[in-house]
Length: 65
Image (cartoon, rainbow, N blue to C red; front, side, top):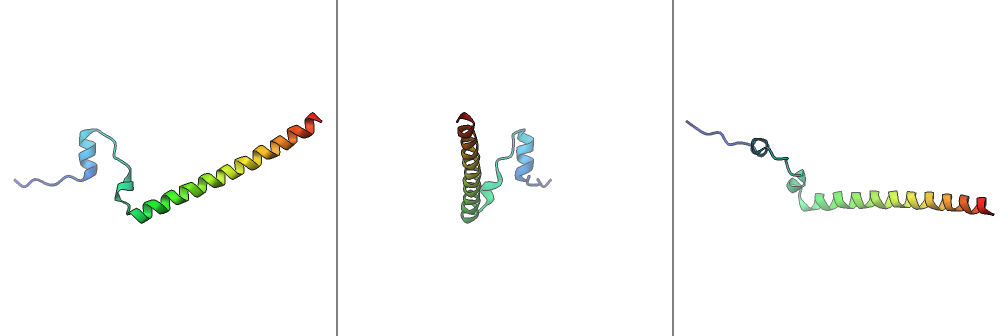
């Protein structure tokens, strides 16, 4: 009888453990591009938060005068 080879997904499912991230299958260039995009997103969010903080700070300063 010939044994069929299980896929990675089947092996993880049979072991009852979660699949690891698929990042392992990405090449290094794609991983770097993904990380750069994530960094750009964080920087953009931080700039937005800083603008909101400044707006609220100015509003508070006007109210206290």
